[in-house]
Length: 630
Image 1 (cartoon, rainbow, N blue to C red):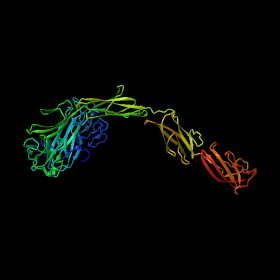
Image 2 (tube, rainbow, N blue to C red):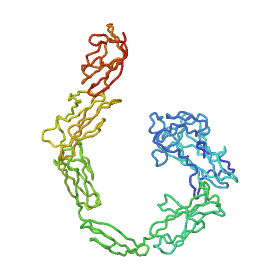
Image 3 (tube, helix red, strand yellow):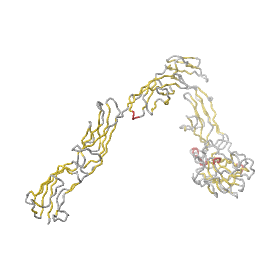
Image 4 (tube, one colour):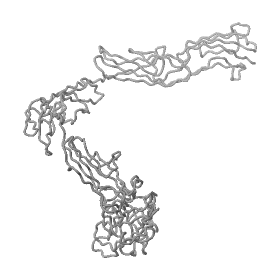
């Protein structure tokens, strides 16, 4: 079926009287499922459904003359015309949509739909719900709607009064030989202007058949495994000369139906069923081909067969002191008993009762025992010795209400003995029980804890670590006599450790800032105290020149190590000429060579140097060469 909603027309050459009356027999399923306009939580459908030839869709109601709107309730419109009534669609769906039409100034078509996959030589019924939009007593123009098939008017509503109610209109017609589709349309015969405003909903299209009921041979009731009951299809009239039938049954009270395999005769035998209610009906059409097409068949009335229950076993429980009744028999103790009860159908029912008498339930309460103060929460849980249903109420040792439930979370947490009280709910034994659980709150705070970083010479590093050095991290501030466990973790090597200190290597290349933490746990508790330290990483640089020109011009006159003050320690420098003779030696990084030996200027050429020192605490060995130019 096309998603476009056109409106109703059909090529059927029958008398006008046939189109002006509704079906008096049984109907089939609704073929035109789009006719209720769907549903949605939005008050107005924003997208134009394209269903009204010659009209314009209005998503911001109310619609003016020549416009229409799809809505679920006109009472929700902020600008509802004062002459219109506010109402919802004609169904039980609170979000169901319907169509509102403000008629054109000239009569004409306002809805059209093609219906396909029909069967030839078949009677169909078309209906629609129409309502005058005007309130009672407005006394304006009244809508007058005609139903047409393939452009031929088949039925007219006449003036639809200001009754503020929905009205159902419709007619029947028969498809011609070879015809499998119809074009149905609705036209408004009254002019627009003051009044002539209408609402449309629940457009349906169904097969119309003869009256189809079910008779029985043997009554509608029987005992379990009693004599079979024969269901007989009764079809009135001559509409189907050779009727085709498919019997169906429902196991959910008629909500859904299933075909009974092979059950296609005029009768069906119900037999061998256990106790319960059984729903039967049949599908009816004029031929097997039409029976297979949901668009070409009708549905019979429903017949319910009641079967008295067979012997059953009942398992149940009662509270101590209560009485369990079966018929005139009473039971008060745990055990199994067989009882025979006469049935309303004249067949006895045998009940085997397995009864349990419940004792009062036992209640226990559980909690974490010791909880860290920093957690600030604890989960408490109750456990009942039976499956009794009721309420669990929690209070603290001051009697303050904390919450309900078999499990609660206490937040904020205080050290307390918590009490849970169980009270059985309606339908139970009405018993109650109480249990307690004590929660010990441990304050894991250790004031004054800190981590101190020192280099290899014992100097404290306040904010920076240098590439290639070793750094010792020491936890300070642990109170004397307090037994603790200390675990280290961080991003250098080693990444983990234990004890009051840990010595780590600072990377030579591509280092990141040092980030280490020490987790302190006081002996006998599970409450960790974290302490952390973060220091900046710096590479550090030291450099010897590649050329010296000792001519007194103040540029490149000397050879020495160039580095930031204080970064070079444990320094030794040796310089040799190209014959391997030592020409200079120093242990002071600030001392330099001016190109002389014992006051005598040395020859130009290449000289070698060997240096050993610590840079930012990291040991460096370096050798190289440089040029002396005069």
